[in-house]
Figure 1 (cartoon, protein in one colour):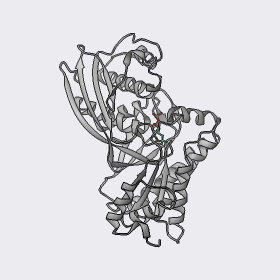
Figure 2 (spheres, protein in one colour):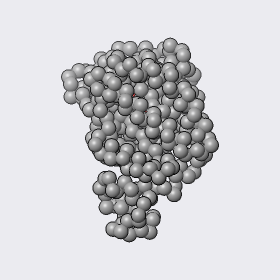
Figure 3 (cartoon, protein in one colour):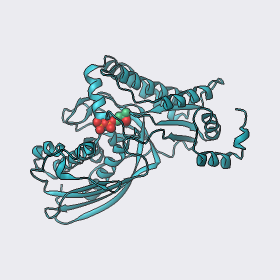
Figure 4 (cartoon, protein in one colour):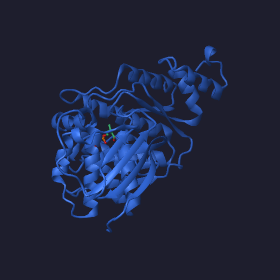
Length: 369
Ligand code: DP6
């Protein structure tokens, strides 16, 4: 791999991915190697736009997220990755950088602890990322951020997509899936170094045009227990987790992929909901228990259940490590479902206007669903 002597820059836009079969638990925390394969679908409209500039020797690293500059001098989490830093080749250096960015983003709540930077990588990066969705609220925001950084770096240094995906993984596990569109599987791999732990695209994002994802943002605040901390706790204490990883997930992934390829919405939704529920069951099976879904999340579950109660599954929910919901539907069911949802949640007036416009219905005299 060649080295760079000059400054380079690139801007990329990377979508968030919504996990259908969840990643929860690492067999190796340092290399971010998961206990099970996982599958996600990208949501193009929710993205992180990231500008990455790379310089050699002469400038300082900097990171800003949604226009907030991250203070690099006051985060003790840098120390570990700087201490580990050994620039043997370019890829190792890039991995170090992504690890470093991971410390930044994950540690931003601790920015004001006292600690200084002891050394600095040879490569310096200036990263500025903006997201058009709330950061840290269970919408895989760090995934989009790290995927964007890895993608940008990959473009600069002509990395292969496997390398780009691995690089994103080192930042945040689920990020390795965000470097592709459509339906994507992250293969856990078997190499202790994580060399074969990266994502691959299963089908393109254009392959099921009628499929829609409605993202319902119920709470924009950051979650109290991060995914990393939550899965660490689950690994230590949940008896359900190893059973799911070994006995349930492989078959579930196979069935989900078949359903997706066949556009079998009922099966797709059934499996997606089952996996979301099982993930949250593992959270409750963790000690101390993890509660990511809120009362409002449960209202969405009830709305979906009622919508599906007429004999056919037409909506499927999934919740990541946060209260916000993603509901999958086919195009024709979006408006009827939102009307149904408005019986359970007070939707903002703008959303109701949108529904009214699309559906040509008088919201005040809602159609009898
Ligand atoms: C519930 O990828 O955020 O969204 O690897 O520790 O950074 P780290 O965790 P992260 O975990 C995401 C967990 C999840 C499920 C998923 O995306 O598969």
